[in-house]
Length: 158
Length: 290
Image (tube, rainbow over all chains, first blue to last red; front, side):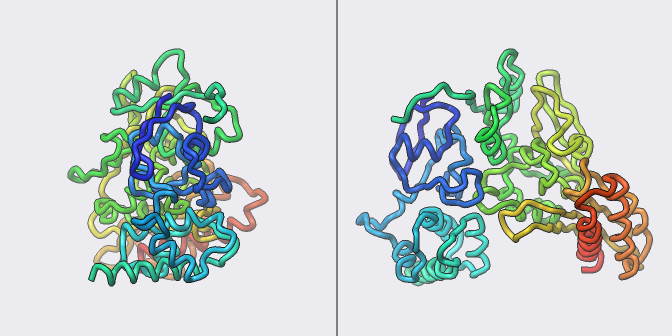
């Protein structure tokens, strides 16, 4: 069936079977391999994308459910010049990236939180990351990177 | 392009309850409703889909409402956990439901999963069930033959079993606004704080009169009995009495006794007996003592 939606601000129309997941549609039909398949049952968050501004596990979204939606994947998160944005920069600065497989989901979970608030407590940051598993970092550095980005975005507005 | 296979099932999006019911009642096409997909997609990953077509009801506008009409609350079945938890209407009158919704999975699951899906899937551990039962929630079911209403505690007949008939859709829920001054709460026991399946959970609501005696109380455990229900035996022993430590402890013990009376003693009882006792006592304390 024909599935039309916007991915990273670009309208797309994809002919795909009705029974595949949004994750498979993004990876296999659109070549957007930033979202990863970890657990495939909604427990790890490696496949997380934003759907109409909200974090979802793309492994648990049926592809045609995305019809008419705006999807943001990690490929759509970058600075205006195409380089890393401030949050991604802070992931590096704070040592929040080791093996990297959880990072696309972590960055999107962070962006979803920062869309809602620029004054998150550390507890709120941990809650926002509760569905994203990382086996390397122990989470501290990821929380630090998001906290620092919130502070920098606040001071840029002030 | 990926390799093309015959899709195992078809997909169609409904734009109204009337359209959804027509699609679900289509003769010759075995259809099931699709809400947030958080249960269905996990299921079809390993099992042969027991349907030919999914009817997507997740965007039906009339199934997304949360409204107060006088002394009644109406919650659409396609409302997500996040939408329920963010609702000022529910925050004001149904703290137990808000807390239950916030305890589900992580943010991405809460952004997709729906209350209607949680009830229709009817997992024994479903987090919204005890709170919905505690609030005396009624499910409104629509089909080609009309509409009928069932208490959620009657709709869910066992683990993953409901009284839903083929072609029937949970369209919305209603519950009476609890009397002024009633507080409610939900407590969950899982292996970790987030992304955890409930081992046991507890919803309670209550209020004291001017003399400090219980004049309203509800108690509904989750994952404790195969069919969710209010433990009216425990409610009865609390009504009219001051919530002393002794009485709350006795209420906890009675909760365990009622559970065992329904389930019998089984391998998990040794753990569940003490756990449900503490959970009932603590949750009742939160609503009756503070």
